[in-house]
Image (cartoon, rainbow, N blue to C red; front, top):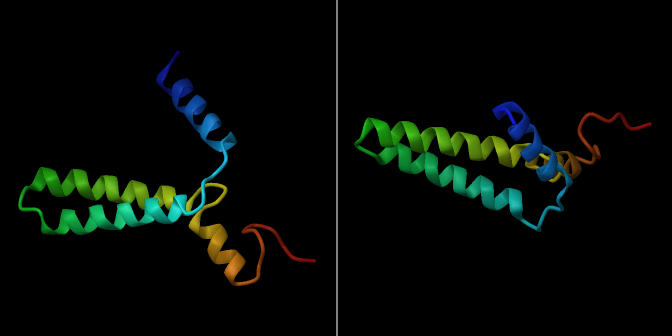
Length: 86
């Protein structure tokens, strides 16, 4: 297996599993916390790692089937993002 096929397999398995309630909000909170930690760290490496991990978690929270983008679209009454109401 190549690295790309392994990543694709993880993505496929993740897309098929059911979301648990509040999963994306918890991931968003963890990402924001890491960004706050990165801003307070004195070490450049710690800032870099915590900032990258925090950004990745925030991106993860915003994507996916139950992501923040879907919640925001539902709150605005548009339904699912990318779909046009008839």
